[in-house]
Every structure is written in C-alpha cells, then in structure tokens.
Length: 227
Image 1 (tube, rainbow, N blue to C red):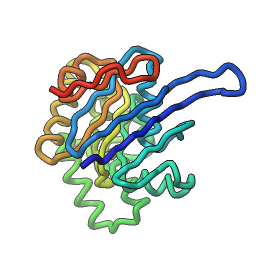
Image 2: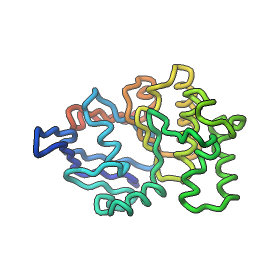
Image 3: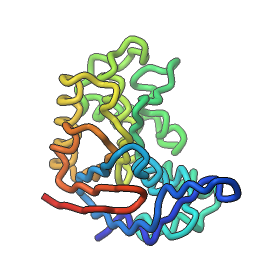
Image 4: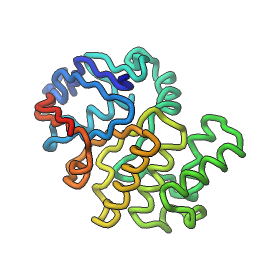
C-alpha cells in the first residue's frame, strides 16, 4: 500500500514576476518500508519535492496524499498537527535545540503530543540505545560531534512513531566514518523495524545504499529505478 501518493505536483515560485518552475508535474508513489533516494543536480527540485511531501510547503497544483489523507486540503493548523503525528524530519543542519540535552531533544515532539512522562522516558531510552548514544543522554548538541548530532536528529524523527522519515541531505555535513555509521543505522532501522526513509541527496554514499532511486531533472522525473 502506498503511504505517499503525489499526483501531478507542480510548484512555481514568484509567478507574478519571473516564474521559476521548480516542479513540473510529478507523479510518485512511495510504499511502506521503502528506502528511497531522490537525486538530481542542484536546482532539479529535490528539496522542493521533499518539502511538499512533508507539508512544509504547498504545491501550486496537484495533490499529495499521506496514508489516504489529502494534506493539500488541510488548514495550516491541521497540517502542523498532521506533521507532528505522521512525519519525521532529518535535516542537513541537524536543527537540534541548543539548550536541550540529547534526551530532551528526542522527547520534545512527545511532549507536544502530550505523551506521559513514563512513555517519553521509555521511548527516548530505546531510541538513544538504537542510535548508539546511550552514554550521551545528558549531553547538549555543542558537546556532540556532527555525526552524533545527526543520530540524535534521527532518534528525534522516530520519537513520534511517524509513518515515514524524510531526510534532506542528512550526510552533507558529515565525514566518511560518520556517514557510514549513520547509513548503517538507518538501513538497520529500515530492515528490522520497517521504517520508511525518503532521502533527498547528492551523496553517492547514500545513493549506493538506496534500494530505489528517483532522478529529477528540471523539475521532472527522468528515471525511477528499483534495485
């Protein structure tokens, strides 16, 4: 069953000035458990597509359905609630809250979901163990390496038990060793727990691990290959 369904997605910026057509009619289905990389040159529309799938941006035309919910029809407040409960995000810049510890960053979304303290503590413990950071629970982002911060970001993305994870250039700021460790961890979560990952990436190391590669060129899908 498809958990993401994009139909004829178009996105145009500054249509009243000099129109920039970022997406030119994208049709894409993502099924539960996929490990998919969206690739293409700079300006091809990768991040725009990811942002629209994640409800961070709205299409100019077309429809996005997440688990049979048409998010194009949701109000801004409804969209915020929907994202919180259904979609996990991992960003290139980590986007951790500097004054919070690793534990507090991971559990933050569960606080917003009004989960009990007992549930938050248990889930956070499990996730930090899963990403290999049990000994960094009380460290703030400034006390962690880039690779460790990105692992916290993955744990945070998983905390809400989302339907899928969107990862926008998650390895761009990491060295080779950190990238390998992060990709190993995400592949393990995908294979053992069925977590669905959709990446936007230039990184050949990510592309090599993906089981499906969707290539964008000039806002259109040029190829869609499943290995």
